[in-house]
Image (cartoon, rainbow, N blue to C red; front, side, top):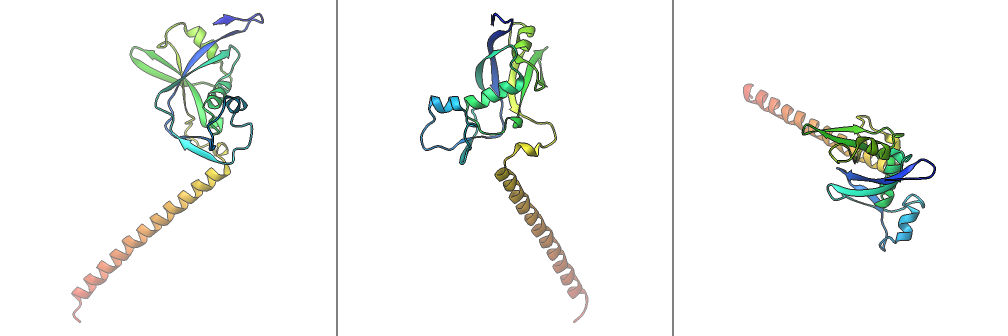
Length: 188
């Protein structure tokens, strides 16, 4: 870390990406250039997307300033990987190990990761950072695009239709068995 004239300091943090779901990137015919990466995926409206899984336990080093907030770190990581998903779908967690037990704590949007790293002292077991999906237990529907929401509705519609079909089939079989049982008992 280095101290700046204004009293702030700069340094590197290492962030491990532990994403379970695929991420969306712009679908292009040519590979992205460095200039495209600097503009960021949100600079222009993304018309076509492609999704893929980031390799498990990908690690990225970021050079940040002491007043950089957790939300800005998430934005920077998404820009580095050219991810066009809404940043609110992701959360930054601090990870620490104590007595061979791992503890994860979700950082608030305003928290400053470099400051936390400095206060924790050296050693990654004392503190490291992890980017994960934002799992609050409640779905943040505003974080999804309109096509994603329409896709959810189509999936739910198919699931509902399949469930109705299974229930109707089950009761049709029951009706058939009951009619067969009645026909076998009553002399014709």
